[in-house]
Image 1 (spheres, rainbow, N blue to C red):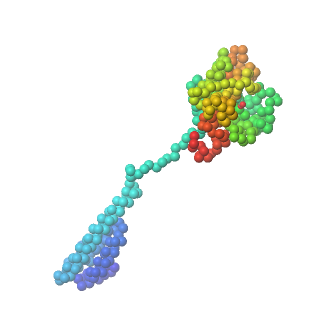
Image 2: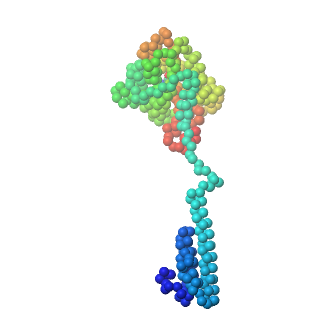
Image 3: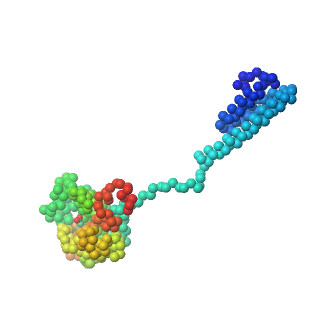
Length: 343
Ligand code: DAH
C-alpha cells in the first residue's frame, strides 16, 4: 500500500495503480468520515499524488497525473453524494416519522354481556334510590337457609343440590342471604340490590350452569304492596329489554316470601305471539319474587305489623341471553374472545 511506497518521485509513482487503489478505497468507504480520511490520504497536501504533481518536470507526466487527480476528485464527489443520500434514507427510515403511514390498530376491549346487564341493573336501581351491596359467596347454612325460613326438609339443603364446604358452610345457592345481612345492618326503610355469583350442583345444560349470577332486590317500607313490586320489575325489564315489554306474575312458592310469584316478561323475539324461544307461550320467566314473609322479618327483628316489603331475585345470564339473543348459557362462561366479541 502507499504507506510502504518509496518516497514519491515522478518516476516512482505508478499513476494507474494509484488510481485503481484510490478508486477501490472510495467505493468501499461506507461513511462520510471514512471518505474524508481517504481524501486526505489520496488528494491531501502530503499525498503521494500531490507530491508527485509538485515534482513534475515534463508536460506529459503532468497531464497524466492531473487527469488522475480530476477523476479521483470526481469519484470522491459522487461517493460523497451517495453516502449523504443513504445517510438521509437511513435517518428517515429509522428515526423518521412518516405521518402518511396508516396508524396501528389497537385492540379495544368490551364489556362481557353479563357485565353489561349488571351495569344496566345497577344504574336502574341507583336511579330509583336503591343501595348496591355485595356479599360473601361462602355462606353459612344459617344465612343461606335458616334465616330465610327454609324448612328443615327443603331439598336445597341436600348436598346433592348444594356445595357444602363444611357441615354448616356452603357456597351460597342464591343472593337472598343479602336480604338478611342488609336487614341486620340497617333499620327500615331500606331499598337494596345485591348482585353476585351463586352456586348449585346442577348438570350443565343449554340453560343451566353450576355457577351463575343473581340480582337480588329488597324494598322494606311502610305500606309496600305487590303493585309496587310489579311496577319495579316492569321498570327494570324495560331498561333491559326495551319499552314495549309487559310483565305478568304467576303464583309460586318460596320459603321467604308470601305470596310468592314468578315474574314473566313478554317474549321479545315474537312480541308475545308465541315462538320457539318462548316455547310458544309468548312469555319468558325471569326469576322469583314476592312479599317478604313475616317469619323473615321476625328472624331479623323487624316488626311485620309496622313494615312490609317485597323481594325479587333474577338471573343476569338469562337476561343477557334474552337481550342479546344467545341461545345457550355456556358461551357466557367461555373465555373464548371470538364468542365474546360478538356482543
Ligand atoms: N332465591 C330465589 C331463587 O334463587 C329467587 C327469589 C325468589 C329471590 C323470591 C327473592 C324472592 O328475593 O323474593 O330461586
